[in-house]
Length: 244
Length: 244
Image (cartoon, rainbow over all chains, first blue to last red; front, top):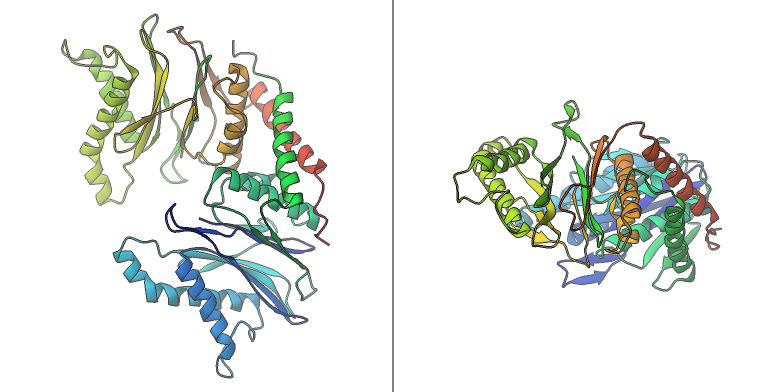
């Protein structure tokens, strides 16, 4: 399983992904699920992926191979809109499904994969897309300024309670980490390290990139104080009086 | 969708179910998903159900019909162990799957259903079972003193953080209601009223039965103060200092 979140805020974008993969509980490994394409002053594109790892690694390789594409062919480095980037990623996903899907299906193995891609290309505003397993995609809006991949439910309530496009970047990063805490607590197939990236709007370069490992002092403090705070609020609420 | 929770505490058992059903978003209705069989001094059995409503109503009807079963046949009123009750419910589920499953599958309609059944029969301790769609079942233990049905993920973190078999009944009821709040907030296919039942251990009679409707003063207060408390705790936590 996987957990990834991406936010499109007024001040910029935050991307975060866990790094646990598993093929059955007896085959667990660590893989980075975040891929960054940066050309300072021109574009920053961040891709998060969930689902079948062979499929998503294939997608990345197809996008990377484009770098050596013949002149004139659309690549992740040449397109002038994030919409075209999402289309390229969707096409790459379809190419991989075409290649592997039938064989996987014959063995009853899930070939599905989902991708979040976001960032900014010079001349455009920052944009965020969710690409479905079929290669079609949707874009985030002010009403829904975030997307999640994978094990989304445990960590969704805190995002819904706190986040708006106007949430300050640090507060939003804190919220994302609490969302990861809830998810990691409830699903052992989501695990550390967490890769986090902060992209300041209109900067056209990566702001901060951070890998949060087991024992990270800030994340450990956050987990402990959040859990304690929840129990305190819970304890302060009155009990039902009809429950005799 | 559905959300149901049942707890087996040292002091007794709590059962709770929402009452929204839907066959597509344009066909939403209210049905009670809790069924109580009580013979004071002898047994209290509570059944919660999720999944295909025709299937679960069929299960209840099969169990009810047993009341008129020929002398000597096992019924929910005659068996001497909650284990046998779970087996009866599992058999009824299999009977319904047998009857409707094939026709539903031909139309691509989900025939699955899950049941929680718990309570106490004179001569035995209180017991709690989760019956799967295939009719097999598992029993709750001290390590896992609760079961959920339906849309379980949003409401699970608070149960995991707070509940143990030793949690006092009122505090456990409060925890269950907060778990419902998180679920209702995130999934519109789970809705009020909530049916709640408290069974005091070894009493062999229903303790309290309560229907929590829209505008219920206690539940409204709980939702508001819980949301406010979460945001307060969130606000008190320090921001990450590496997020410049």
